[in-house]
Length: 149
Picture 1 (cartoon, rainbow, N blue to C red):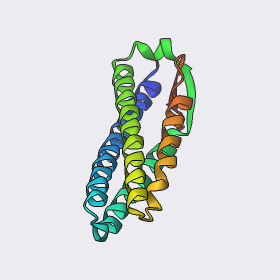
Picture 2 (tube, rainbow, N blue to C red; picture 1 turned 90 degrees about the vertical axis):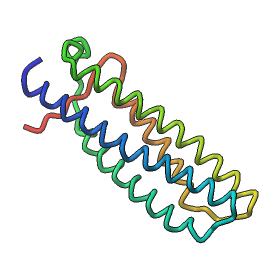
Picture 3 (tube, helix red, strand yellow; picture 1 turned 135 degrees about the vertical axis):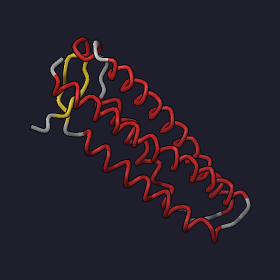
């Protein structure tokens, strides 16, 4: 793999790590939403949901950065140690997204029980879109490398 591709792979790993930081914040704020709904503390929900939305917007931004990728042979990339870091980061992010989707379901169920209007938490659909993006953008036979010229 040439130096440009190796550098781009390092940048891709960095983006995945940035995404993970935001996903952890989303997971944590969603846990807080669950607690707030369970305790009927709807006053806190607005600020929690705003914080969560900011994190979701950052994830969208980082995902758009990875959206300008072209396939490169996985075999070629596999010789680079950064490839393994990328695989680990992407796998960890998928797991976090799946956990967030489950938490979103729990909040929606609780909201229905309490007859609350938690419109913003319907962003779970957006979370599922991120999972689908990972599946599309990291097929098993290729790696996507940024070509920034």
